[in-house]
Image 1 (tube, rainbow, N blue to C red):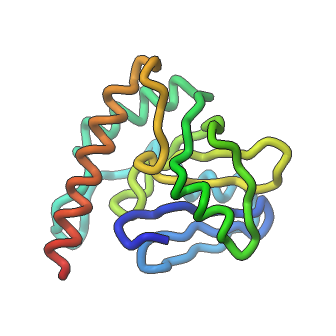
Image 2: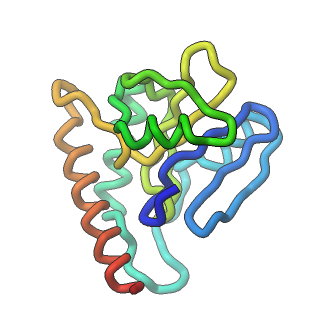
Length: 163
């Protein structure tokens, strides 16, 4: 897992976990609990430590609403993501093109997160929107690309400051 963002979280439907930056883990016992714990609908965009948020709150809310309205949609998985999945303790086989079934928000730790259920598997893959590519033919592709560029830029700045 890269330090700059939640790269990927592969979970089994039973005994799942959500893993974030700093290896914070939350155990959950059911898929519904997993989705509830990662649900973004009522997330408050604030940081109690007073540090600037990585994402622009209003633009992020709007993009999440657009993405949720478009569900399900296909994304191309980045080669690094596919490689990370195959190097897991329990390797996960995914296709280069997968379908997003749900969208969540994990704050600064992961940003907008895509839920991907590989066909025929009992795994749910959660990955940051910055680690997938949406087809340019989708009406929201430009907004996703802008979000990705902004988030990556902020993450790089944050890493530079923490060194």
